[in-house]
Length: 228
Image (cartoon, rainbow, N blue to C red; front, side, top):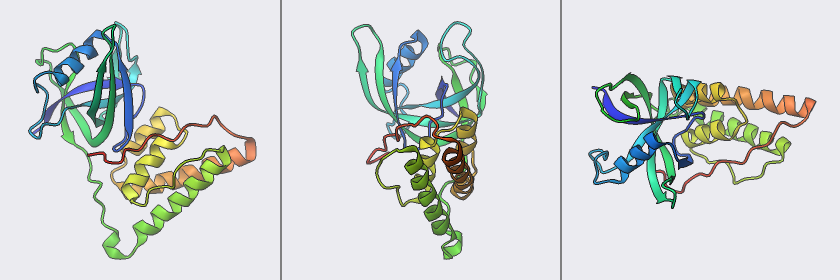
């Protein structure tokens, strides 16, 4: 059965394991934060407080006109820190958790923010192809391609993680891509297909940058020690 989940539309894509700071100033989303930090009204059965981040397909994050359409696959954002400012805004630190698919909107929720009806999306617990090592080889290839990509952009950073799933989401977040490209990586059915797509993208982008010059560099996203 679908579960109810508060939705926070953004003009960006959140990936599992990545840190997302938010400056919440719109009244409807202030109410969402208040519901989250209240007396557990929006806690799940395990006491976890979070909401769903979904990328905007059409429309705007703020304003009366607002969002017209959302992508159907998003990522749960777990609330780690909440700071209320003197002017009533909230500064949040959240961490991406599991992916979900929006199957409907709860029109009877009675809140100024959207409440989605969502189901878990995909299974990233991919076995290493019956132990023949192909996933490890693929992940190693992506890690090397990612190192080459960062080198041509002049971006430093820590060594790429060894866990294939973690690597796949870090590369998706750290590569200079437009929203639609990031969304396609978020929607990849599993780690193998996400890594395969990233290997192609990294090799292509590295070749283009080397041939025609650098594109705007981006900071590597912050990766939490423990995303649980």
